[in-house]
Length: 95
Image (cartoon, rainbow, N blue to C red; front, side, top):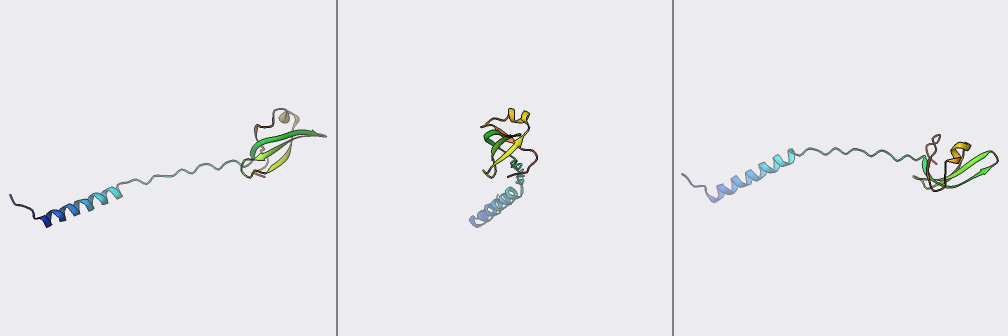
């Protein structure tokens, strides 16, 4: 049985390390990043409510912009909308 010189051993070791590194780098699968759905910007927290003539209103602080806007609701919707509750306005995109 023949012996391998020190230089030959280092060459084989280097080639083995390079080979394993290449296999390791090419064998990794790319992780797919799933985008998170955008937050709806037509929702917020009711900060105040009241009645002004025939307008049953709520003021809502927008979750995206932090702006407050007043909206007139139907009497039935207004009766179930309480300050501190989350509420979404369906006929606007944001404010």
